[in-house]
Image 1: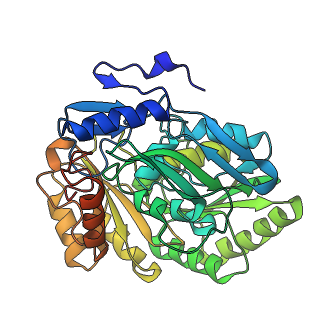
Image 2: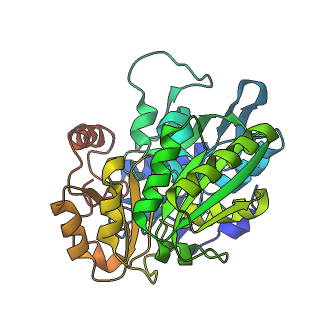
Image 3: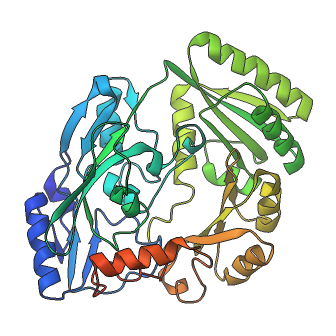
Length: 401
């Protein structure tokens, strides 16, 4: 895939294959050496603080396509493969993995799964937990463990693979991931409804969700986010709709959305063909990402709430850039420093708020993940079983594990 020399980074160990990864982790476990585990390390701003480790290991060179069954709509890949390279491979068979992580051309698929990244198409296709059907991972004992397989329906029981999704590499190293795939739509089109008020934009959103339409993605951006997305978008409240299907289906989307735009009082109604739409959705996917811990924005907040309270998230953001998955109730707000007061106000209002990404200096100043729920106890027990000495990515699970 990508030439190995592009991965070279001083002080990082790059195992060439899974056997070598087993050897490295087994040795670190036996010698009680701490390990910072990653791919291309595009997620360092996410999660908890990156603490100095005895060994920094990258899976970036473990990047093969292990198994691909186009007729079965399944694929097994190693963690170092970039998401974009995977998408390009699948496109040749008009198939797709609608995971939509940010920084798709840079991020590895293993990193996207370990950080539980997903994007605008989650409402229709689900998140990594819905798309992953099997996984193998390497423990600090140097052993490879397999969970699930290459079929969409697996035997019932504890699915260890699901535990590694969103674990930020604190439990084990992902060695292979099996995904279910989807056919790529014959055509895709993006519709943009621009409004002068948030209330009108939410009214259009509600109308779409009540309709028979089943768009791939429905996102909502405030004027500051619209400006940040670029591409000459109007600096208004933007309701973005991505639809896929045959020509007749897209024609119906156009008719229905024009009626909704008129009834809600849209200031503008725009249609983007595939190429311009692809560039727009790429910017939408990247919106929640800080490229480094020294990004000009200090933090990105992820606020999860009900659809009826989504307007409160935008009101809380004020003039800050805010973008939401309008059909699932997840909003992202980009904040300058200091941002602790905004986090406190959101939580005081009963909005579930996580510091998604954060500059390194801010990770000790605010609780990144205030209410992880009962799942944390289960995760802690599993951490104790797999990594009793807390050697792997210590603190990366939002400063908790």
